[in-house]
Image (tube, rainbow over all chains, first blue to last red; front, side, top):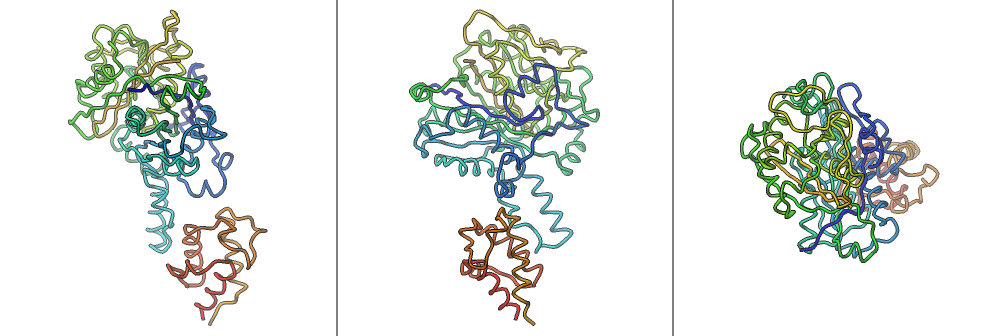
Length: 398
Length: 80
């Protein structure tokens, strides 16, 4: 089966415009938290998109378009497309879709009546808007669709894109995730669930963690068939080695306390990558900073990785940018690829106080170097979502 | 009583730039195609016109109007 490589990345996150900015600022110990949230404060859509494009896209799609432009440029695709457009797919995840558009439309309906509901409401709010608009903007005519699995959406999207290339359905796929749910309804709803942090501090795995800090953003990756990418002289940023997806079949919001579904996804991903647990150099955890996730994920890592769980560094990007929901798996995969390239485990910022049984190496506070023997390093990136969805990627650095 | 063509044209001229049209490109003769105004923009324009003049432009109307002038004339005739 063909190997699937990453040739381009792009991101808009609470740590700025650009994939590199996310990684560098995280490594420098910066966080993107403002008040109780992690907004993309630097993102001004009209600086990147035409007036018409801005008008035709909810914020989650706008974020995806700008991350997509960066990914396409970094893959060297910004001149002529290297493949038949019919052989390029577009698979982008979101947790919620255009929630801001929906809320505005509903405000109009309630306050002004049905005649004032914007006609663009549905095409902007639909969860497949980002992949649709990305395919349109770039002329990709292969399969395109959205993936909706809450906070696992981008993990599923990347895994699905990998499979499409492995199975010969596409030569390349633009994939990733996008989310822009910093809206009144979503704030109130997550708070009502006690899911979000009342203190606005994201400190995954720390004893004092009290919920996730909601963020927004987008991460886009260009995946290509390795042979074809090499033939066109592409710069390889990494390899998507394995993908595993399972379901808890347990509860609408809570992870199964023993992390069985998550552990199963880890095992499937490792088997798909043809890798023993000892082959993992780093784990980019889902690590949401909620009491339940971080405990269940720790148990899952111990069960799936055995003794190696205690040795492998485990850190959470969410300590720097909060939880980007359906975009999380993509921006975290991108950060993981940089970490592998730089041969370093980025830190879990704010981690200071351990909790009983949460005793892995969470890389507190400062990055630590990874094996220096020169071989390509391998990491795992976890994404779990409401609904009991688990998606795990195994990534190899360039 | 029909509305004055000038007042309809004024509303159209104010609306189109919201969709990304350059104000200087808007003339009675300009086609919506040339102005890159598509069916979704026309749906929004219809809503604005209906709000202002109580005239609904739907379905076949939208297919028939090709230029800014067509739209203005149709609204004026409907309001009669």
